[in-house]
Amino acid sequence: MPYSWSPRLDAWKLVLRRSGLVLALKVVGALAGYAFAYLALRRLGAGGYGYFELAFTVLSIGSVAAKWGLDGLLVREVPAREPQAAQHFIDQAMTASLMGSVLVGAVLWFAAPFLTEHYGGFTGLWRSAALAMPAWTAMLVWSEAKRAQHRYVAFGLLQSSILLGIVALAMALLPDLNRPEYAVGALAAAAVLGVGQGWRRVRNVELRSLWALRGTATAMFLTGTLFMVMTWTDTLMLGYFLDPEDVGGYRVAFKIGTLITFAQFAINASLGPKISELWTHGRRDELQDEVRRVALLNAAVSIPAFLGIMLFAPWLLSWFSEDLVPLAGLLRVLALGQVVNALCGPVMYLLNLTGHEQSARRTMTVAALANAAANLALIPWLGSTGAAWATSGTMILWNVWALVAVRRKTGIRSLVLWR
Image 1 (spheres, rainbow, N blue to C red):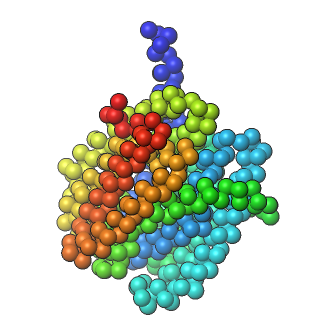
Image 2 (cartoon, helix red, strand yellow; image 1 turned 120 degrees about the horizontal axis):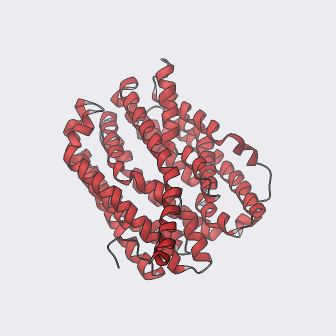
Image 3 (cartoon, rainbow, N blue to C red; image 1 turned 30 degrees about the vertical axis):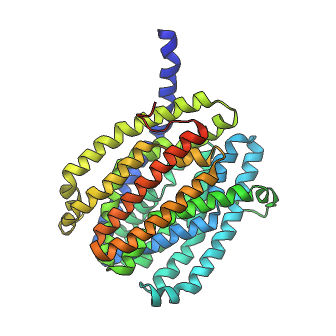
């Protein structure tokens, strides 16, 4: 009996150790992110915070276009390469994504008056996002490079919530940082500092080897774009149909809802490179064991968090503002989608990193279209609550769809109850 249990205990220890590093930083990051939301509501006002979230949405979507799937390729390719070849690949990815981000930022800069006239906000807001695009994109790519190299502390420090915490600190120390476009600029400055020595990896290297992987990169880009659009469609449509104050309140509720997938981020972060490594070498049984351990950890954390939000939704919202307490029902709706997301496991990682990125793209295409249609129909009818139902409904749809696809195409069972 000791002989049979020892390898399993060692595997659990390894998963917990890898995840624990990221989780500890995720705790710090979450506190920093909530501190930013708290300070932004008070310094910028509900409307100003809503404008910031709209700019951050555009920044996030634009960065996906600028990366063109290179961040996903890093997690897939770097663990399977020798150290020198892996570093060369990182150099190319950093250079190519920076070039793409400058192009996307230029388009956004010149489109700013059009966005202001036909969508809302103001020209300075959109142009601040345009200027932030290169730094933000480089930070995201550098973060994935650290994860691909199993450098989880660096990866954890480069998460957006940590950078938002730096912005919160700047807001607390600088009284003049009281406009949403200034907050976007501070976020870009934090991203520049986060990349640090990584800027030296941006160099004039040949990009031909990336061209050979253009099909895979494009499939990952399309999946990432669809996922990002689906993630932010509710915010964009709320900004179109409702007031910035409604956007700000909704985003606070959404951030609280992500407490359910709080540990999932840390647990899944270390799994990505492992999936690529085990699948490439044909070690399917080990991969199934790894996924099952991750599923059990996700369930152990997400279910209590879900129950806590369902019971204490008004109290959690009151921490940010008493005016947000009426959004308790909306928060509970968002929690439903988040708990299904957590319990289904790392389904998109499994599809993208096992050569089934086309299946991932098809799944996201259907989900993105359904999400856009649901938001378009429900927001004018139910307001912010309609956005919550659209978001949770499509989150459940794509998770269950991808769960079945993973089982059929890889034989891997990612649902904790699926034997």
